[in-house]
Amino acid sequence: AQSVAQPEDQVNVAEGNPLTVKCTYSVSGNPYLFWYVQYPNRGLQFLLKYITGDNLVKGSYGFEAEFNKSQTSFHLKKPSALVSDSALYFCAVRPGRYGYQKVTFGTGTKLQVIP
Amino acid sequence: DGGITQSPKYLFRKEGQNVTLSCEQNLNHDAMYWYRQDPGQGLRLIYYSQIVNDFQKGDIAEGYSVSREKKESFPLTVTSAQKNPTAFYLCASSTGGHNSPLHFGNGTRLTVT
Image (cartoon, rainbow over all chains, first blue to last red; front, side, top):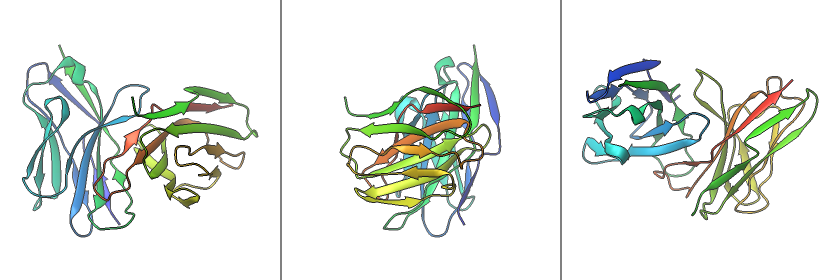
């Protein structure tokens, strides 16, 4: 069975500092990995995805993520945090196979950027 | 603008009543999904549909029903058989491609008392 772990319920970072939100996964075969962001009482918004190729993926709003196959991780990063980045972040994985494949979400990490 | 519209944003019902949540998309996506979000539990899949007139149960389908009579619409009915219906419900769609991201609506918060 596939799974996603986001080990930190909350991450606090000062504005202007770099941020990292951690994600590890378990899936058979090659993974397709995604990050989403959710603002209060809103739906999730897609940030970025890793399918294949370069291990460093760039996405929306200055976010990037690094795929590490040996550590089965896909950590979300940003060089300089903004207060407006404060939100709930979800990592998700699906098997990289054809046909319908279930997407599994992590439990989310609340990012708090402190002014 | 293309997107997914969920209505209503807030819904209140008495225990024992069925209630239907609306989800409409104008993205021309083939696949649609219903998720339930509870604090600290992430998103759990209720039902999904890959094409019109076809849908499949997700991980927590008991007490829920859906229909997919039109490509753009995927309503979810929360029946009285659902033991803990109070939650935030999210509808999503995708092109159906195996590497395509999900596009989400802004959710319906259902409170059953």
